[in-house]
Amino acid sequence: MQKTTTTSYSVYSGKRVVGLQNAWSPSEAVVEYLRRQGYRNDEIRRMGYDSAAWRGATYTAREASEAA
Figure (spheres, rainbow, N blue to C red):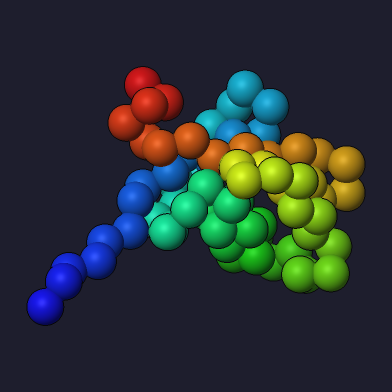
C-alpha cells in the first residue's frame, strides 16, 4: 500500500507570510487558504501553479522548508 502525504506551504501576500497550509500543490494551498478566510470561490482568480488573486491582492505559496 502506497502512502501519500501532503506538503506544508507558506502562503504569502506580497513579501509577508500570512499563513501556513498543508496541501497537495502550491495552487491548492493558496486557494484553500483563501477559502478558509471566507472568500468565495467565484472571487478567487487562479493565476499560476503557485498563485491566486482575490480582489487585486496576489497570494503565492512556497514549500515551508524553502521559505526559511
